[in-house]
Image (cartoon, rainbow, N blue to C red; front, side, top):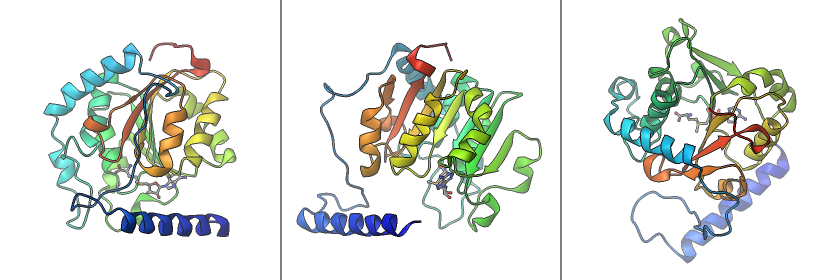
Length: 256
Ligand SMILES: C[S@@+](CC[C@H](N)C(=O)[O-])C[C@H]1O[C@@H](n2cnc3c(N)ncnc32)[C@H](O)[C@@H]1O
């Protein structure tokens, strides 16, 4: 991380601490600051495809059990695959059931909980490509096992898609992806550049983008700026914000 970025983060944290003192949380629980905005001037609205997708995914998520993934959690873990709504894991699994994608890209493997949720109902011959800058095996609390990668349905790729060279190296994969789950680094900068990179892909399939943490401070502006059809599905996803985008190259729908 650059010195300027480290300094910016320190200043941000100091401002957040100051704001907390000025106006303490009215609720005695861990929380994060956010803002709410009038919808009239937002850059876009959901389309019929997103509304139908959300309804069908919610219906599926209600009855999904991820108990075998929950059983892999370490006692210290703070993510709960079966807590729904509140966590995004059952919604992710439901999106796979409804969309039946063949190519899924995840950005941010971490302990592997979402990678496992995305893989659970993946139809053959589908594959989930999960990107991280740190190998899954280097997280002491990982929920992944070597055998998860044996049949080739789940593949980890190491690399920062915010780096143009890495992005270009994977442009074919990104172009053919049916679903992309963006769960890193969620600083608003990466996401803006990633969307810019997608827009430059020539012959790309239309796809669903799932953004995590859209209600967190750094993601508020980028979420608001997206002009493609989008739907804030936070009440049925992650408490920090879950957003769906119907991405089509040039804004014209090719059908997902
Ligand atoms: C919030 S965690 C992902 C959680 C996971 N998707 C889940 O829901 O279980 C974020 C992960 O993104 C990784 N990461 C951070 N910056 C990244 C980048 N530019 N490209 C890929 N991964 C990145 C971090 O190493 C970390 O493992």
